[in-house]
Amino acid sequence: MHRYLRAIGFSNVTKREQLQDLIQEVVVNTISKNQKKKKNKEYYASMDFMADDDDQVYAELCLDFATGAGICVRGQIDEKNTFLYEYYFPYLRGRHISSYEDVTIERHAEKESYAGVCDDIKVGVSLIFYLQNMIPYKRLKAWKQLPVKGTSLIISGLSVSGTIMMPINKNEQEKRKVKKASNERNQLLAQARMGDEDAIESLTLEDMDTYTTISRKIQKEDVFSLVDTYFMPYGVECDQYSILGEIMEYHQEENCITKEEIVFMTIECNELTFEVCINKLDLYGEPAVGRRFKGVVWLQGFINFPINHS
Image (cartoon, rainbow, N blue to C red):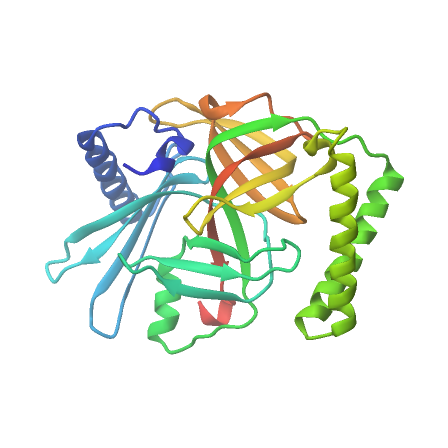
């Protein structure tokens, strides 16, 4: 059972038989909706497939159970035009472009799925995510059109445990000061990546000053009153992160099957904007614009390939 199924409103799916029924629901509804070429108000269905150099046809069937959140089933189509199921995963389609940096993609060892790596200097760590749109990537690979320049990346995250926290009180002058310092640091990071020794030295001294300041203040203040946002790797799985970010917007929807409430939030974290969804049962506190979300997310990514390559 996929751990993040509950994030999209399937906390009651605990048995293998229930999971098989759910997968069957995705496959049947996706194929029927695409054959009829229409979408009803409960389901958004999409189907994509491609053939590789070995004439193996890969298929990807996606079905929403709330706006932008659903289950993707992947497999192959045999010579009899029958869909052969391989695996599934829950997804959340993001709405905001998170990065324009180049992305490196690698295949997972266990199955035909892929991880992406994006080095965005704003975040401070390499973003490793689960690739949502595998078929377009495999199609470009089969056409020998990789690597592709000029892509953009839409990041999203599923969470099964989160807390709402109050914001740090800052006036407009303090916000402008933080923004200016962040821009200057990003410039230094870009220069340091190109081998500028002065930039490396400046960043080292800045980190030492920050460490000294926090070590002094932490004795009297709470850590979350000093740290506004963070984005850190979590656990042993490379695409899971512990985040603390500001809520820019939010809304709630019901899973159309289970009627469980799902909370959708647009988060700004380390100058990175992305969507997060979580089951309301797993969220401690009441979300509001300006408050902060703290939790662990499974990071997913959708790569927008240039039109002339898609």
